Image 1 (spheres, rainbow, N blue to C red):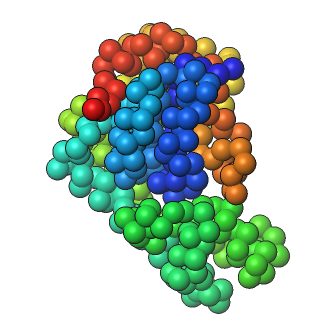
Image 2: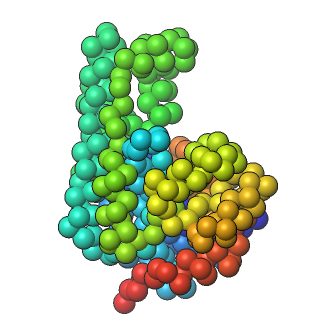
Length: 298
C-alpha cells in the first residue's frame, strides 16, 4: 500500500543512493504522499536542494532529517533522526564532519587493504566508480568515499576479475577492519540537544525479531524516542508488536520505505524499497508532527 507519509528516504547525496532530490517531491505529488523526510546516510548535504524542491512543491511537507549509524557497546545501529535544525548547531556540525571523515577513511582503508594483498584498488579507481553513479557535486562536497557495495563488487569481480566468487573475495576482505562508526554517546545527545527525535531504524535484526530483553536493553542504552515499526524488512506481525511496545513505553512509531533509487534508473539500489510503500498509520505521522515541524520555505 502507498501511505500518506514516508519518513525514510535517501537521495544521490547518500553514497549508496541515486535518486535526485526533486524526484521524491514529484513522486509524492503523483502518489498523494503529503509528508516526507529526506534522511541521508551520515549527513544533511542535500539540504539546500531539499529547500529548493520544497519551494517548488508547496503541497508536500518535508521534515529535515538524517540516518546516522552509531557504534555502541551492544553493536552498531542505524538511527533515523527527524526534526533536525535547518542550520546545524556547532555540536551537530562536528558530528557531520566526523561522519564525512569516517566515509573517506573507510574508502581509503579498504583500498589500501586490497592493494597490500596484491589486488590494486586505488583512490583513483574508487573515484572513477563513484562517478559512474554519483553527481560530481556530491563528490566535491564529500570527497572520495567508500563505494556502493554492488558497484564495487562488479568492478572487482567482473571487470578486474580479481576474485572468482564471493568466498574468495570475503577471504581477502576479512583482513580489512572496518573503523568504528561515531559513538552513540556523542552522536545521539547532539541530535537531541539540536531538537531532533531519534528512532531506531528497520529494527528486526537489532531486536532479534521480538526479543523483549534485547529491546529493553537497547531502549535503555540508546534512549531512542521511537521505533521504525513499519519498513519492508519488518513483517506485518512484528509491525504490530513493535507498535504495541511503543505504546507501552510511551515511544513514537514511525515508518518509511528506505527508498534509494527509482524505476528506470541506471542502477537499482535497494530495488525492493519503493517510495511511499509501508503499512504505517497516519496517527503515527500526526504524533511525530506534534513534536517536529516541516520545513518552512518562502
